Length: 115
Image 1 (cartoon, rainbow, N blue to C red):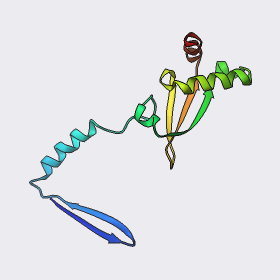
Image 2: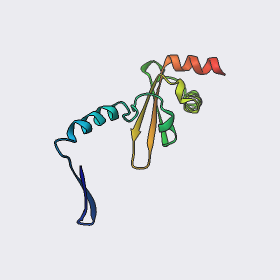
Image 3: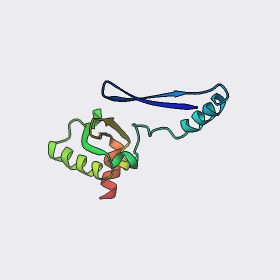
């Protein structure tokens, strides 16, 4: 295997040349790496939580008519414990992630049970 590094137009470029003998070993390593892929962005992940720079809250269709002060209270509570959210996703930004939670009836039950 040969690794080539060079600079082109102010950017560092990398090129790898692999011999036919080394190719089967490289393919085995690729399959091992697939097991350790990046976390999914649609469930709670403690590693991504450390990179959250913004939060957003959506409301399930049955909860859209809640008063604004109740919505604010529930949103604060669910974002304090995001692992309890039924529907959670992370959106990638330039500086980190936005945690987006859609509050459901089940989430309301868990919040009220905990308080």
